[in-house]
Image (cartoon, rainbow over all chains, first blue to last red; front, side, top):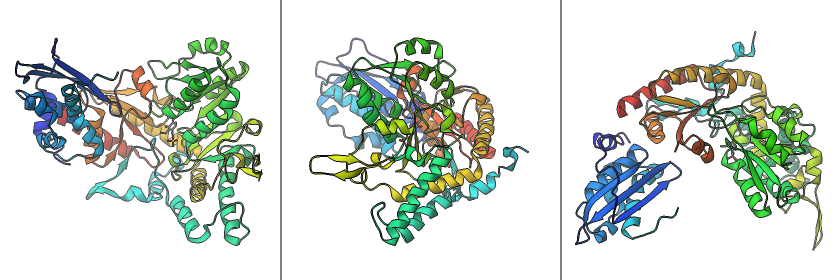
Length: 126
Length: 412
Ligand SMILES: Cc1ncc(COP(=O)(O)O)c(C=O)c1O
């Protein structure tokens, strides 16, 4: 509990990496967590080998949701869509390096949910 | 001497066992989430405990001693509730699970019998979801329309269009007595007078008012009043629908089953008399007994004194919150609201505020507080909310402010 706001998380929250949007993008997906009011959009550009060449995220939310999105964008540069589809939630929690209760877990995993939905080519619901 | 000067916070805190616990070793609890649910005094916990230890039996149909005792305790609680809100008769006090079920009871029973295609139902922009969704469901089913009383930037009902809305001859006006986010205390009596003159009935969501201020149904102007036991020092699982007797007499039953019938034949039934007509199946008996004890507790303290104490706390809380750079408090000035302060802190998500405050044992809520349309109105994804009750102290407000400075330091 006491390192929920450890330095690296606060750093990613205050100085998010790859923050912004890509237009045009090869893949774009956005989703929210209406219970908390967290919202995240992720845009990807792929190279000829279907690897992530550029990534950007935007949105708003708590430190945990924003930091996990920021960390995830760094993690997926150079990865293929197939590799992205295989990222598990443990990996995200490992990046964050903290233990979370069920409510904050949703915050932490929103970016992964958005990323995977994009990688699987889902259409946005609303 | 005013009621206020006799208000003894220390004695009141001692009545609530949970308030002396530590959240974590060395960290005492500072509970600022009573709008979600209140804590319970020992007298309520003991009444329920005694009920199970001594009197437990099913009610109403038994002739043995325990059945009679349990029935007397449960019906005694109904009498206490009736007196608490100054109802004309216990026939007007229907026990439900909570305020939400009380509102749904009206929507299903009265609504389905009286609302037709093209009819209008009035709601407000500051309602809790439980006073919105049942009307959305009814309107969708019946082809009725919803008319909305908006809120102003200051968090009050904007009644400038109310006369136009009433021109549409709505069947029902649904509004909260006190907002669970803004704290606004609405002028229910004036609104009800206008609504009645236009031929509409009035349903008041009293989930936040009945626990915190004196409510007299004979002067309030409402036709229906819904509230929950768990927000007024009572247990979860028991709530109340009060309605004028003549209305209840005309309404068809809600749920069917045991207790709500006088006589059952194979193919039809005769409904029971009030209030039992609306109480199908074995009710939450121990919870009813607990609610009776909660009403005794609040009556003993005095609702005018409770309200006066909360007005002092909220006035102080607003003053202190406003001195914290970056804090915005939503809702009207202290004189016009109850003990609820929803706020935001620039650059920090409400979740993070609540999480950091929790380290110091301070319990506040973060989110939309079941009022998404209201948050949309102010373009806020979420707010943090501190809410106060009779057991809160000025010192706890100071602790909240200190906690917010820590939040700022961490995120600054
Ligand atoms: C204004 C208001 N109405 C209705 C409710 C619903 O109460 P319950 O969940 O007990 O039915 C609440 C509780 O949060 C409330 O604050």
